[in-house]
Length: 214
Image (cartoon, rainbow, N blue to C red; front, side, top):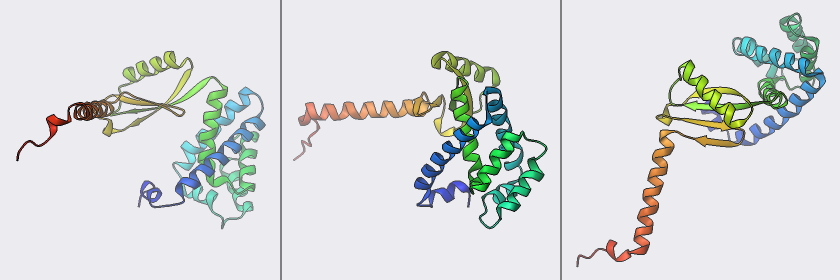
């Protein structure tokens, strides 16, 4: 069963996700604040993202170790030292050990995601999710990014996702705001307009829609 299917069948998922998200924000803020000045926070973000991209994504066994309650903190500290000891700054390594000491390494991905959003805000960037019906060629993608930059007034950090259900066009998510310029949304708006017009016509001239046969 895929992780997506598992989520659909887990009744605790909604509550659990909210709790993890809140906890991740707490650790993300604490980690960045403890790192120091802007340059140090930038370095920590680069290292945290590299951990996800180069370690967790490629070696899922390590992520299972981080999230396991059956593995002692001493063993997890050993893994952190062996895997990251010579590759990370002291600030980032200490942050990971603080999370481990509190039994929170299992939500490291969530913490990195929250830290990225917080760092983007602090550095004048804006996280933007761009959903497209098919992958955009680089020149067109850059045009979209440039347009978003002018519209938002900040430097957007764009994550692109391909969603064939959109048919064509795109959907932009900025924080809790969604701008839907997809063909699917256009079809839905047309359908809703037709339905609204039909209901209005029935209400204004109901006799025209009555069955006149005896």
